[in-house]
Every structure is written in C-alpha cells, then in structure tokens.
Amino acid sequence: MKILVTGATGYIGKRLIPLLIQEGHDIVCTVRDTMRADKGYLKEEQVSFVQVDFLNEATLNNIPKDIDVAYYLIHSMSNASEDFSILEARCAVNFKNSLEQTAVKQVIYLSGITNEKELSKHLSSRKHVEDILQSNTYALTIFKAGIIVGSGSSSFEIIRDLVEKLPFMIAPKWLNTKTQPIAVRDVLTFLVNSAGNTTLYNNSYDIFGPEILTYKEMLLKFAEVRKLKRYIITVPVMTPKLSSYWLYFVTSTSYKLATTLVDSMGVQIIGKPSNINSILGVLPLTYKKAVELAFEKIEQNSIISSWKDSLVSSGRLGNDLHKYINVPKFGCFKDYKESKVKNEANTLDKIWSIGGTNGWYYGNFLWKIRGYIDKLFGGIGLRRGRTSPTDLDAGDALDFWRVIFADKQQKKLLLYAEMKLPGEAWLEFKIEDGILKQTATFRPRGLAGRLYWYAVLPFHGIIFNGLIKELAH
Image (spheres, rainbow, N blue to C red):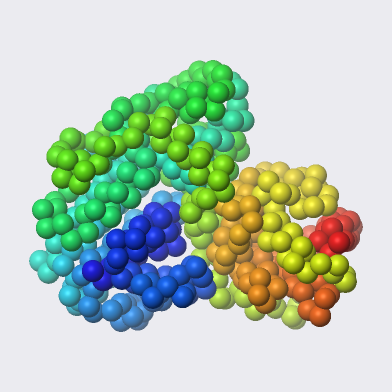
C-alpha cells in the first residue's frame, strides 16, 4: 500500500517508518521542514518526503492523491501554551479536509485513553481531535494509549532521571494515580498490523499493558530493574505549580512539558478491555520487561527517536530550521578561532560526538555551571543531552543547543543556542583545507545582550581556546 505518515520526525513516527518499509509499503512522510528529513531514507526508493505544515493550508496540496492509508501522529504535548488545543484542532481539521480530497481508505490515529469524566487539557484535546477526524469519506481507526514505555520516551526518561538521581523522594500525591503503561514496541505492532485491516474500520480501541500500576509502583519497579534501592514518601501539600518545578529541576524535562505532565498525571488512565489483542495477535509486555528491553536499546546505542529532539521541547525555534541556517554577519559579536588539523577523520568524529555524556572536551565544569544558571532562569540546561553518542542530524537536541546543519561530507556542523539568552547564538565547526574553523556568533538584543557578551567574554576565551585545541589534535 501507499501510506502517508504524519509526525514523521516525532517519537512514534520515526520508529514506525522502518517497520512499514519491512512490510513492503511505499511511504510518504510529511515534514514541516525538509531539512529534518531523515538522510538515511533519501536513497530509499520506498520512502519520499513532502513539505507539509498542517497549520498552513497553502502546503496541503503537496499531499499526494493516491494514498491508501494515513497515520495521524501529530500532537502538541510539549506545547503548554493556552491555545495548544486550538492548534491541535486546526491541524486535525486541515488534515481531514485535505485527506478527503485523496483516495485514502483508512486513517489511523494514536490518541490517549480518555475514560474518566474529568480529563486533563491534554487528554481533552486528544478526544476532541478524535471527533474532528471522523469522516464519511474514509474509515477511522483509533488507538488510545496511556503511558508509553520505551527508550527515549518522555515518561521513560523522566522516570529514569528520578530513579537514578534520587535515593529518597518526597513526592506529590499524584504518584498514587493509577495507570496502565504499554511498551512502545507493542504500540508499534498495533499501528503496523492495523493498516488496511477492514475489521478495524470506524472503531476505537484502548491499548494497554497487562498491569494496573501507580506512578509510585512504576518508579519502584524501574528501580528494581536498575538494581537500585529507592524510598518514596508521597505528601499532599505539593501544588501543581510546585510539582512542575520539582519535575523541572530534578529531570531533563522542560518546564512546559512538566506542567502538562503534572496536569495529566492527576487523571487515572485505565483502559477498557476489548478483543483487539487477539485480532492483531499482540501479547502486551509487562512494565518491567518493557524497561529491560529499553535499556538493551540504550546499551546498544540504537535509540531511534527521543522526545528531546522535538522542536517544541524548548519552544525557541518553532519548526523552521532553515530560518536559522544563515548565520548573521552584521550587528553581531563573534569569537573566531582556527587551528591546523592533524587528522581530519579523527577531528570530525570528535565534533560529531560533542556534548551529552562525552562532554565538551575542555572546561566541562564551566559548561555545567552555564547549564545550572540556565535552569535557574527557566531554561533547559545541559541535562537534555543527546540521543546518539556519535550521530547528529538536523533538528537533534544537543544539550542546550539544537543542530541546524550536520554534514560530515561537507565537514560542517552548525548549532543554535536554546538556552535563555538576551539575544541569539550560533556555534559553527567546519574544516577547510586542513584547517578547523570554530566560530561562536552572538546577536545581542538591546543593551542587556551587549552587557551579557562582555560579561562572559573572559570565560569564552578559556572555553573556546581549549575546545579547538582538543578538537584539532
């Protein structure tokens, strides 16, 4: 079949595409910025990319008319703005209107479990999108999942941060809320096996794992897998705002996502049983098994996607990487350094491995201090890390930077700063004629930006001198 995948650069979408290829389908991926198209698929005959922004009706004509099945995987959970539900509704309306002009027979939507009378804003929005996507032109199949457990998922990484950093936790009362977690590989099996299955047309199914657990039990079971002893006391005095700050400072999540999660975690997420497991031949994994398999992926450095790479996780860039690829030349401060390279391949490997657990090669304690300062001012800090220790692609998160351009053949890496700044900053590495050229560019915003540049100038001298020496030798 010819299948349209929206949200192709997202957590689920990136994992779904290779599975659909294995099934022999032709895949059309919608991306808001073609710079984020996965380069690994550019020579793949079964995969094509089209630039579509479902908030921009002018781009909808790029969707091919001859598709058979479409996956709707567009969500805005990381966007905690007051109008995120309006944006989700607009996306869904535009998607529906454009798909009704095609030959599509089935649309598959991954939603959230919404069985409680009172829902969070996030879950209410998901439920509203379900209603919007209903059509007389195509059949709609809805899968409704709760907490998704897998390497790189927001829930997995937040639980990992809490368990591995805190031997003793005084936690909010919502840790006693019950939920039904499901392994990401089970979610993907449901999605793949449902394509073209007429039995599922115009039906909705809750999908979930075999256990009902509280968030506290999830933390303790996670600790068992990691062979850690953890103690948790829940208290009723933490307000939602205080709970959000607790998650924000302890984990790698952004404050926006923390507030959305806290809002959702107060709602019980228990699925309604159905015969969907037998229809699609799925035997859902237990929570502990899902965690164990996730760590196998982590240890093999084979994490396909991470919530941290979402462009809305910081809210600074929007979705248009190409707008930031041309580094400004005027009205900017620059720190330029160059050094002769001993071994180009070795230097490129170092550049492509920068940040995350590998560190910044020189003055790591200064980078960490900058990360702590950023967190104090509501920024993302350094704890976001990176998804792969050795590979970089446009759109990837890299500590408090975002990858704008990454091409080893062109020997160039360009990063854009997502930390809190009175201005904008870029960091570029490129090798030309055996010379490594390292340029830090800062475009100040007003007097505060200029004062900031001169305040950090002594530290830049230490950090950037040391960095280029380590990279070039």
